[in-house]
Length: 347
Image 1: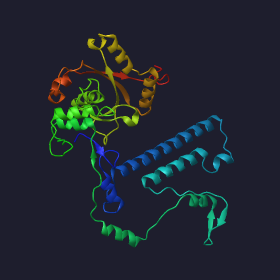
Image 2 (image 1 turned 45 degrees about the vertical axis):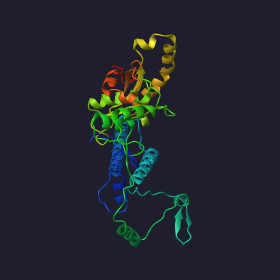
Image 3 (image 1 turned 120 degrees about the vertical axis):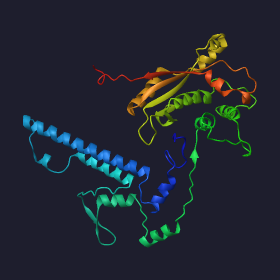
Image 4 (image 1 turned 90 degrees about the vertical axis):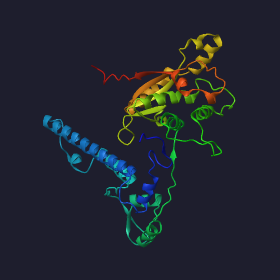
């Protein structure tokens, strides 16, 4: 319902079983990965056709102005650009499962072992690739014997997903290592905060207010409460991604980078605390420029999410801490960063 977690053998939602059934011929419908591949091929064909029409329009305009004279070189065969585009399109079709367009090339031929003639380019491909083909009766026998397929995939939840489902929604039960006792939310929070360090923190030690899990979960809970679908943003170099409806409907609109903020007077009372804060805030301008450039390339808006860190708690037992009061002690500030491009922002 909220796109929590991902499949262990899939990119997003668990779809390994459907893909395996499709591979064995037990299901005729296309899987989500195949639909995505076909959309990419269609989009690529549309872009190639649009580029071809633009090229023809420019050539026609040059002919009308007398700046282009048709010659034998312009009338024979496709250009190098069209040839490269067609090759890349064939590669995309073969990757998505569609048969590539047959390429007709001229070249010298050499006799094969069975007496037929083999083109040089075909001989190179034959030497590089190997394929295994089964008889139709063997494929039918495999389909008949494998009517029931065991689902080998499971759902993977992040720490933030698991705690939000257990504490925020109350729809998930997490057991301890003995698998006999259900962890209450306070114990689960203490366990997740303990394992946000590497190596894990000593269970008897009091967790710091700026441990990585608390910073991440405060922002996660904040955006989930506002109705956003929150996913990991590690593949784009950020902490979180925000989807309006979900990954299957559209791309993420915002990329969130989490930054701790130490504005409370407690962190400035002594020189030792000020040095500790300065050591933790070690980001540079070049780091921000790199992050912003990546998000501009993938057409996402970069949001710097500042999480205000409160003073350390005075309670001795983390297992008995009020989670609601703990979350209220944190504050979230958002700052949108936009990359200024001169040729696009000239007005």
